[in-house]
Image (cartoon, rainbow, N blue to C red; front, side):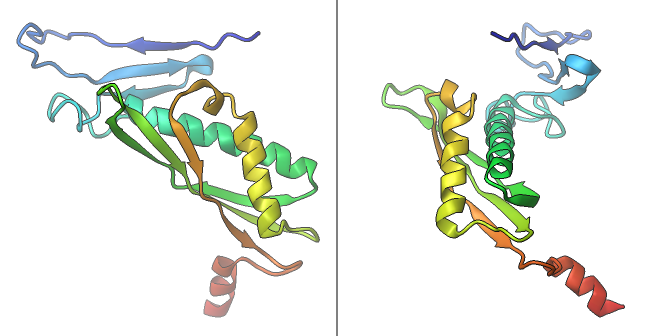
Length: 173
């Protein structure tokens, strides 16, 4: 068993509060001293009481699913002998009402794109298997009722080839 902690720190800072016109901006503090600004979503609590320059719980939820999936994907890929050079996920969460009429994150769609190199790169079928295995192992995905979809994209480099961005730089020289 492992225990994970986070500190959530908010202060009224002289605001009236009782009129419901107070800032929702707060601090999220994690182990190691990392702090990030948190707030309610402007979709839930209107500006200026929410802060667009802070992470809201819904964004953090989507990010935690994406991050957990990526970490498992990398671990499984290396065990299968694949060299992952880059990984990018443009994850998206949809907030809607469930069958009971409660607002919830109903669907999170992960759109990971991995770039591979080396002598062995996964086929499309192998790529989908890696993502399916990562999803099955993801602690966060296993902890939620939200449907988590994965729509992977792959960029594979042939052995010795440069990524398109590097080829563009070489051509410009």
